Length: 371
Ligand SMILES: Cc1cc2nc3c(=O)[nH]c(=O)nc-3n(C[C@H](O)[C@H](O)[C@H](O)COP(=O)(O)OP(=O)(O)OC[C@H]3O[C@@H](n4cnc5c(N)ncnc54)[C@H](O)[C@@H]3O)c2cc1C
Image 1 (tube, rainbow, N blue to C red):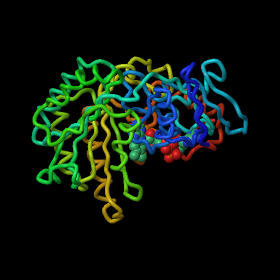
Image 2: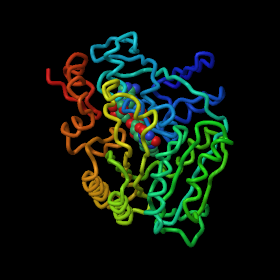
Image 3: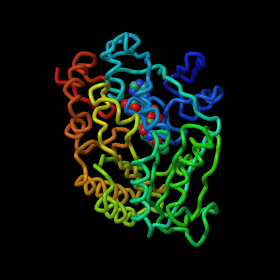
């Protein structure tokens, strides 16, 4: 399912469910257009969109699911139908955040926006011992930043590769990755403050093709490694949160693990909680907790325990809410599903009862039918 049809006049794209982000960007960028997707090009568009989808364009253009115009799908009883605002609107509401619970999606139609082909990208690493000051300044910066900027920050250890000065290998860092969703000239100005938060270990920033920016992190996730990720919304990035993040980042058993700070707001925050299944968007920060380790099954326990420990601890700064694209194993079961969907949970169960009462689609972040 790899078909991709761009309509540059209507600024839409229809893509088969087997398409990856990189494949989609490649086709839409031929017309200097893009729809918001995640930040690693090898990810599939399907799962990502069905649970939201956040990336470099999120504060300007929203989540991937916010840009959906329609889907074609097969329901549990074998019907083939289209869901959009006009047709089967209840299912259209449900698939924008409700994951794979309501049917097999065969194709996705998205709204496109002018992006690139070149964009300004800030990608800069600072020493870990400056994390507190750097993150405090970043919070002030984001409060004033235009929606064109959607920074992602991460704490981790400097990779032992030649792109980084050898004396820093294995040391803690705090990094920023952000694109300016507008002209390169405006972007150079707008992103400058993120590059001037101190003396960087290394600054990879510069104008680059949008399709290349989307691949910048690909090599950090080799096939065959082991991964266990969790997420939690937090109410801000005050000193308590920053100190806890530093502590957890330093305690990671693997050099490849990171804690990620997704600055939200902008277009993501302007969609009402009941407008799609995705739910509440009021949290200003989403934390991603990424345990990433090499092909060593005997290290599973320590790495999974680290991610779980960090997640449970950071919940003290949260009013609830997790992101179901980084769920880890949902050991909390339906309680966490209820928390993720908030007020929308009841409506999702009612739709599950209507469209999939036997829970045929259950190998997912499952919304259990009660029928
Ligand atoms: C390296 C990496 C980077 C990532 N970066 C980001 C990021 O920047 N932003 C972000 O938001 N997320 C990110 N994610 C998380 C990503 O959104 C999820 O892993 C998502 O599930 C990927 O979708 P997929 O189609 O590749 O997954 P799959 O494993 O194929 O599917 C996951 C689930 O989605 C459902 N599903 C998939 N296809 C269909 C379909 N056609 N019809 C119905 N249900 C379906 C099913 O429930 C399935 O179990 C990243 C993940 C990885 C591994």
